[in-house]
Image 1: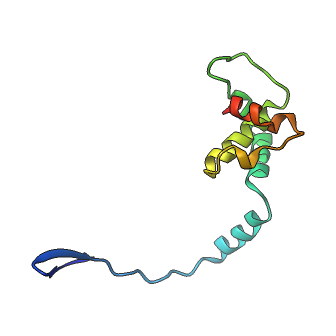
Image 2: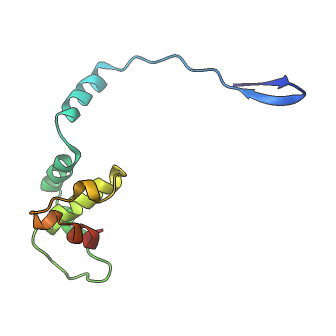
Image 3: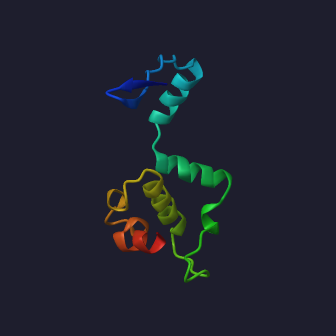
Length: 105
């Protein structure tokens, strides 16, 4: 970065950086992650450390629904990827029904 005078005004000049090569470990990790999708990873981590059951609806802390963990995982995925609820909705699967996901959100 440098500052130059142009037309009587200061201008910030940014110079691009040289590209860094990706380490082999990152290339291997990318290959492994590409083969899996984010919801699967969220559910797998939950199988190691059951954290999804700790989520509770703000107005109904004692509510327990069937497959609530799947709904919470879907909402977390939609929020983490910034895609919203619509792409996650799966009619025919109660835990991924639009109304259920909006409730879990």
